[in-house]
Image (cartoon, rainbow, N blue to C red; front, side):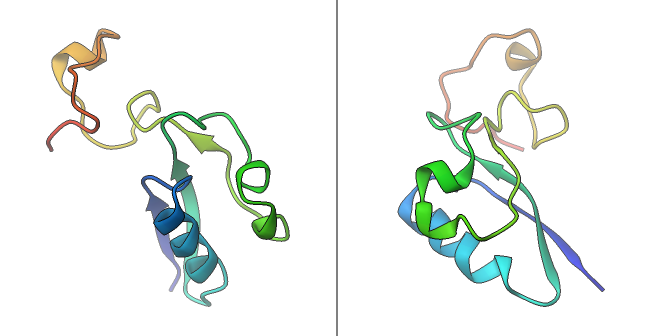
Length: 87
């Protein structure tokens, strides 16, 4: 059984380490990577040492449909001021 994994904050040091470890795990598949200021970039552009891995494009979690919970204000395109809204 393969576990589908999303990593929030993947463009930071800790997130990149999680990507490195999980990407080669035999029962895990990275299906989403979030980043705030690096959204839209490829992980290889942010961390060249991960270029050999087949990874999804970095996305902003608050802007990706179906990616986590949102407040009513965010559904209308307004950010609530929180980095990630409560569930």
